[in-house]
Length: 434
Ligand code: URA
Image 1 (cartoon, protein in one colour):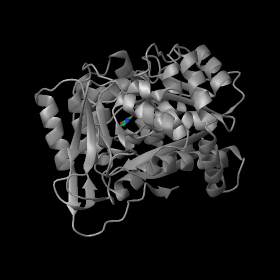
Image 2 (cartoon, rainbow, N blue to C red; image 1 turned 180 degrees about the vertical axis):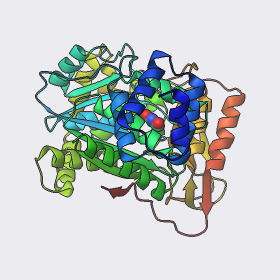
Image 3 (cartoon, rainbow, N blue to C red; image 1 turned 30 degrees about the vertical axis):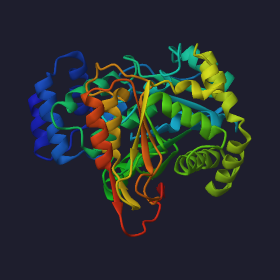
C-alpha cells in the first residue's frame, strides 16, 4: 500500500492491519516514507486515536527498532521505575539504592531534562567524574555489585521512538495519549525487568494537568503492559507543587542522599517508600503495599541504602566522597533568601514557575544544547499548607551570576507563591495507586 493510502485510511477512521502499519513504520525508518508523510499520519493519530491492535503494533515496532537490553546473568528481581517528569523529581537517585537494600535491582534508561523539568542524567552529572554504564555488560556488573543499573539513553535503543518524538515535538502531536503511552512503554519493553512501576505526575508542573487526564494515560500504559504480559503498577502522584524541597541538580542529589539517611522531606519520603512497597509486592516479599512501606521506612532510618548509592557512583567512576559528604554539592557562589511579604498560609506553590525559575538560574535547559550549571537551584523552605509570618524565608536561591536571568528567576519564584488568610491542608503526594 502507498504511504498516502495509509494516511487516508487513518484519516477516515479505518483500522490499519498489522502489516500495513508495520510496513509504513519500517518505510519511515528506511527513509522511504518522508517526514511530511509521517507528520500527516501522526496528526491523523492525534485526532482519531489508535485501535488496540494498532497501539500494540506501534509499540512493538518501536521496541524492536533497536537493541534490546537482556541483562543476561542478572539474578536479582529487576524493577524499572519510570516517572513522566516533574519539578524536583529526584526519585530514581534515592529509590534505586533503597530497592537494592531489599535485594531488588533497578534496570532503567534515563534521559536529560528539558524546560522546567529535570532529568536523572543531569542530576548524576553533578558528581565529578561520573559516567553512566555505557554498555549492557557494564550495566550487568553494576546491578550485580550495587543493585543499581541506570544507563543513559543511546541512539541504538528504540531509534524509531527517537525519530518520531523529534517529529512530534515540531508538529503539535506530542500531547496524544496513545503516542505518549506507546513511546514510554516501548522504552520500558526494550529493557528486561520483572516489574514496571510508572509514576504518573499530575498537576501544574506535569504533562498531565488533571487527575482525569493522568488516569486516561495510566490506563493505556497498563493496557500496553498487559498486551506484552508485563507486570505494571501505576502511582498517580501530585505535581501541583515541586516534589521535596530541592530543585537543581547537585542540590537534588544532596536531598536524595539526606533522604536515604531518614532526613528527607516528608512528601519525597512518602513517594519513595510507597514505590518500594509496590516493588516488594511485585517481588512477592509482602502481601500488601502497606507492609512494604513500613519495611522501607525502617530501612531509610538505618542509612544502609547510602552504601548502595556510594558503590554505584564509585563503579561509574564518580567521586564517591560526594555521597559520603553531600554538603560538597553546596558550591554556588551566592545565596539569596526570598522573604514572605505577608502573613498567612501558603495556598499555592506553582511547580512550573518554580521549575522555570530554577532553569533561569542555569539548573535546566531552555534549548537542548544549553549547558547546565550543576551547583545552582532553589531550596524551598515553605510549601503548601505551611504558615508564614512577614519576613520568614520562603525559599533560598543558590546562584552563580547576578544577571538579568537571576532577577527574572527571583520574580518568577515570588509569583509562584500564593499566600492565603485561611488554613490550607498539606496536599497529598500519592493521589492513587493502580
Ligand atoms: N515521554 C516519552 O518518553 N514520550 C512521550 O511521548 C512523552 C513523554
